[in-house]
Amino acid sequence: MTRIRLKYVQAWVDGEGRATHYFRRRGYPRVRLPGLPGSAEFNRAYEMALGSKPAPVGTKRSTPGSVSAAVAEYYESQAFRSLSGGTPGKRRAILEHFREQHGHKPLALLPKEFIVALLDTMLPHNAKNWLKAIRHFIKWCAERKLIREDPTWGIRVKVPKSDGHHTWSEDEIAQFEAHHPIGSKARLALALGLYTAQRTSDVIRMGRQHIKDGVLTVRQEKTGAWLAIPLHPELRALLDAAPGNHLTLLITKSGKGYSGNNFAEQFRVWCDAAGLPKECRFHGLRKAACRRLAEAGCTVHEIAAISGHKTLKEIERYTKAADQARLAREAMAKSRPAEQTGSKSVKPVPTPVSKSLKQLRKK
Image (cartoon, rainbow, N blue to C red; front, side):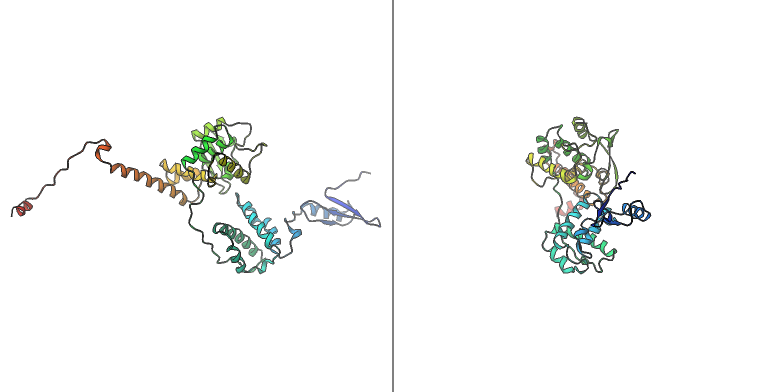
């Protein structure tokens, strides 16, 4: 008789020879299976266990009703899984740090004063990101009736005005290009950021299969928007010079695609090698690309068609700065002396004096 071994089923035999069967699958709750293998009740319980959902991460070390238990359940929710781009990773990092320090506390008893006290220990920008992550988590908890009152309600974090990421200057771009020659991975990475104006999460997914008839098609991970970006001649030349063994344009030494964090770390290494300051980051190339387009006379909507910005407020800063510089040059050119502009000097024509005024002068 052939004995059928069922997947994820383990048996234990006690001292009296009685066998007990359990469904044990990594990441899933352990389930005791009644009856004997092959019986109707055993098969029914086994099928239910196979169709069950994985246990939320951290449930074994979490007390029901605690912050830790709620965070673990939140990770499995639609609210968290609907976050896009690099947001889930950033939010998870914040929540895990919060969980390590305060996971044992009862969720329903977190006071507003506790949240304010934590925020007071952070720098403004860190506090803003932390509050955003916690607020989204608390909102989900309220919807699940895990908490009655929102301890983050009414709390605001005042952040100093800033232009955000540093925009690369032309000198910094030239310095990077001088150190990393055409054909290198670093030079291609710079060009992809500079000539597509896309975020890191989109650049690391770009491949040759996305290029057709001189147009690069991009689906932005953060917004979901589809963009058709014509290839700049400089970028086309760098793509032709790059190795073409893989579809993905930027790959690691092992031949795999980059994750967002890994690429950021590698790009930092390339910048350090070129002697560039710490504020030169990949996202600054997106801003430099918008600046270049504005200086070339592109309108706000033309720039947004390439960068994919949903709001035009940030792009307007580039176009205003470019217009100011252009108008200032034109104004200064008009104010130059005639001999510097190459035109001949013209004697001023005297204003004719009226007859009545002449008579007054004679008197």
